[in-house]
Image (cartoon, rainbow, N blue to C red; front, top):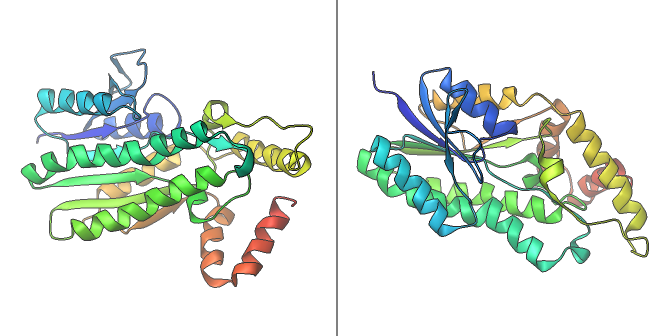
Length: 268
């Protein structure tokens, strides 16, 4: 039986690495991307170079897989970047970068892969978003906004591709033990800033959550489960009970009640 070809972005560490290695152990042929691959192959992942902010790099990576395999059965949009800071104080170039990485780049990847999936009359696209995308979190506003946009665009894609054999879904992780905190853009705490105290408290809480996050292998197991579904849901959430509860509470509580819950949580 021919192996399904998986194309996963951001596969050199964290959630992407766990997903890629897990799928490779379950008879998928995995191509994983990194901006600067250190290996051509490791633990079942065949690495290729990709910068999601570069149109040329996106085209080159996808064409390389098509050249070698003639198809892409599964696309997992996992690459992303974090950003923290008061919305008022984050430089515009950093805002543009986070949206290019978390939204515009992945959307271009989808658009480049779709013609091949239509030609082969099947495909599965999984977008890794974030539970933070369901709400505007303080001092993570641009991250929430970029992931929220990615959640929503998947809904539009599903409707537009409704009469095809191409499946799309979102998986929104909560806090996992990854290196996202070390790789994100971090606005320094300015001693003269209006936000000095509240930002520092929120930043400490964010770092604590990531440092004590769940094992990313949970995400890998969830991805495999979803790939085996003939009719996947639109949204999946993976994380602690409280993390998965938060979007549900937002849906059922009055807006201000929910806002007060978040404010209390972040000590605002």
